[in-house]
Length: 296
Image 1: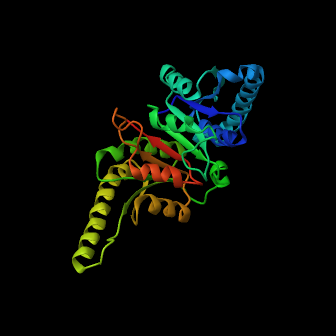
Image 2: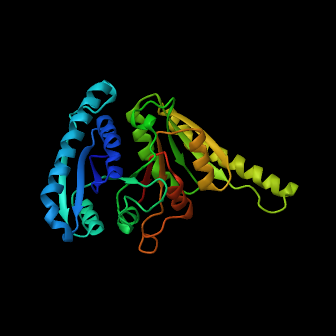
Image 3: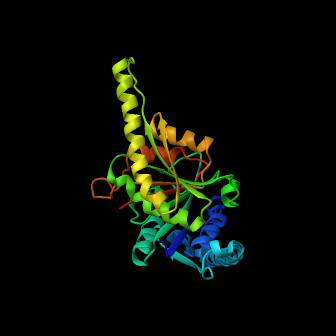
């Protein structure tokens, strides 16, 4: 599904957090890795140092990813991992978005500050613009990423996919399915939906409606899960109770997952700069689980 992934770097230790994670993904999927750094025009005097930094990191990632690929054997990528380093000059957000659009990039990976939500990398609004304007999936790696995820030693490998009753949320499924297949039979897909309980004085009628919503969404999730199970995938469905974003985060705390995959609204002119509130809240709240955002 993915052929080329750009990993965004700013030279900070936080950005370098994605290295181990990116090389693990490349070793399993065979995706080509490209480390991308943008030097602001005002800092051009630092170009030689920045170029040496990113080229060195590309070489290190390539060597480590290749070692992992051999370790995974049949479950790893079929061909050697390819990496390269690219250094651009100019406005970071503009240059990154232009480069992605002009170079057949399938996926962007970047680090996030676990404690400060969408204020990514310490670059202010740069990464926020990328998250909201890029036309390819965005893979966010939180600063408090679990060591078990990097080392692939979670007790149970699972990919969590929040779904609603509309077709847009299903856009995340093909990505989650493909990634689950790449990880082998040990990986389980978990389809979840959160139902908010009544907030007013609870009556028998309100409780009945609430229970009916739960049953309806359970039936919907099972309907979506059926063809996936017929393909041989392990699929579990969960109806959570509570405000959606917080319910999903609490579920992840109790059930650590390898990845959370979510669909965003189609990026039209009217909503390109804003996701639905659930997605925005999850971006701000997720601290330990990688998040893959899939748009149109």
